[in-house]
Image (cartoon, rainbow, N blue to C red):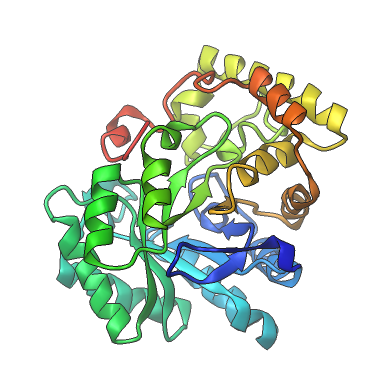
Amino acid sequence: MTKHIRTLGTTGPQTYALGLGCMGMSALYGEADRAESIATVHAALEAGVTLLDTGDFYAMGHNELLVGEALRTAPAARREQALVSVKFGALRDPDGNWGGYDGRPAAVKNFAAYSLNRLGVDHIDIYRIARLDPDVPIEETVGAIAELVEKGHVRHIGLSEVDAGTIRRAAATAPISDLQFEYSLISRGIEEEILPTTRELGISVTAYGVLSRGLISGHFSRDRQLAANDFRAFAPRFQGDNLQHNLNLVEALREVAEQKGVTVAQIAVAWVLSRGADIVPLIGARTRERLAESLGALDVTLTEADLAAIEEAVPADAARGERYPSAQMSHLGSK
């Protein structure tokens, strides 16, 4: 199992090479089965997964309560190995609408207090604002988290979806363990400027969306019916001609995967794993079946010939459609 251990930056903790993104167990992808979700968290911990990623705004606290229940009901040894990463700062109203981001120091500490209570833990392992608050300097937000670190409420400081300049300013304020960013075969905006910056500064990347919200999992079909509360129902990459074009890329990738004797999801996850030991993919599995499939990527070794075939099947910038609706793109550090 030690071969699957990676370290989050030069100052962060060691973690299993794949983490579990828990958002979909509560929000944005339609209804989820609570019992199966908790069983999936337990299965992940049993398999050696350590990093569990959540956010205080995922279904307005529901996801933190679910993760807290999963930890509380897990065997003690498994519970103790878990590292909980929490994103904060996104503002919601009772109807679920988004209201921007709040990175004020007082808000940071308020959000943390509620998260600690919902999760049922005495500290948060990695704490990060979900998106930059344009009205608050990142130095103030990170400085507030650093105060929480000093008091023992937080262990490490992370970032999420910020640009290279913001990364540098944050790192000059306090040690940063990792940057969370969408990174997959069809979301490669991080490669030009952001990834070189994190590597220069000794900051790791926890990559979410490695299967692009199921789009490149090999399980998504054009005729799939999406619930009204499913993010993909209005995400640009899942619309009209964009969807068909992107699914054609998946079929090209499927040919490469089948020649390798693996699934589409496994080769897509293995590709992200191959980008460097400083990258930890977050798997957004909601069931034990999907979790097991993605964990199989750890046993996939990609040769230079494999990587060339993958690149030919899915070239950089081949996908059509932005990764978020236009209103949300302005909050991102890169396309």
